[in-house]
Amino acid sequence: MLTASTAYAADNAFFGWYGVSAHGRLDKLSPALENFSWSVLNQARFSHHAQEKFANNSNRLAEYLLFIQFNYHFNDQLHVGLGYTRDWLDTFNENRAYEEIGWQSEPFEWGRLMTRTRLEQRVHDNAKNRNVGWRVRELVQWSYPLPGLPRVALVLNDEVMWYLNSSRWRSDGFAENRVFGGFNFRILPDIQLTMGYLNQFVRKETSKQSQLNHALFTNLDFSF
Image (tube, rainbow, N blue to C red; front, side):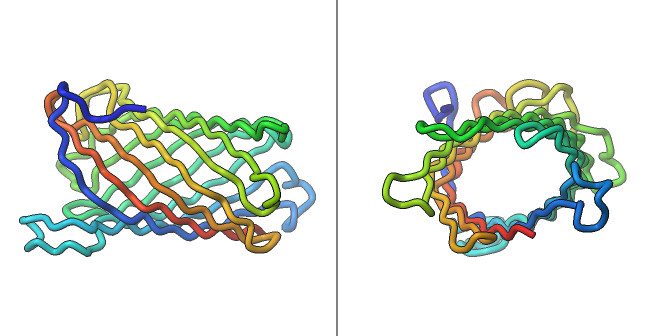
C-alpha cells in the first residue's frame, strides 16, 4: 500500500464512486459464442470537498465513465479481453482503448485470488493533445466468504498503475495506487452489491506533489 509520506506533499480529498454494471455470456445468441462474454460498467464519481475553482461547490459530479468490454474465456479461470472507456471529466474528455488478461483461482477454504493485467491507450479529446499515453494497470484481489453469512464476502484488492511512456498525461513511471476494502453482498442469485472504502494515491507531475483521495465505493452488478 502506498500512502503519503515526507517524500510527497499530499492533498486530501473526499469522493463517492457510484456504479452500475452488467455482464453475461454470448452463448445465448449462438452456441458458437460459448467462450465469449460481455460486460458494461457505468460509474459516476462525485467530489464531496470544496474547491475554489468550482466556487467551493462541495458536492458535484467530477467524473463520469462508461466501460464496454468483450472477453474470450479459455476456461472458468483464464480470460483475455478488449475494451473501450469513454471518460467525461471537469475540463476535458478522454477516449481509452485497453487490452487485458485476467485469472482467478478455484475457491478454497481461505478464499479466492484474482489478478488482472490491463494495458491502456489513453487519448485526450483535445485535437491538439492526441498523443497516446500507454498505461499498465495491475490488480490483485482476495475475497473470502464470511462464515455463517453465505451471501456476504470480504473483498480486499490493490491496483498499481504506471506509464510506459511520457505524454501529455504525465511522465513515464509510477502514476497511481488504489487500495480497496469492503464487502460483497449477493442480494439475489443474479444481483450483487459491492460497498467499501477506496484509498487512491495519485502522483502528480512532480515527485514532490501527490493527491490522496478517500472514496466511498459502491457498485450494483447484474448478471444475465
